[in-house]
Length: 117
Image (tube, rainbow, N blue to C red):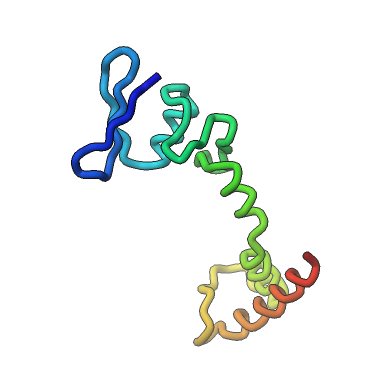
């Protein structure tokens, strides 16, 4: 089992592996890759291999974060507002300006989605 030591800068964590080599990990995504490959048992947050989920684009995220993302209502409301106004191109989500009517429609759709829950 690798032993961990916080580096002096405090930004990365250094792991000493069983074979004596050292490995520095700066990003959480890198740590997730190490957990998935079996190099580490779990992340410093306690996420094990069974708790990881690979998205369609290939990103590794925790299952909890994945399920929370699926529950998010605002992207669904925004998509409904675009569909309602028959817009099939990129539109920035802003309260003011040229597309303010879309924001208002999305807010109404969001209220409907929240009632269904």
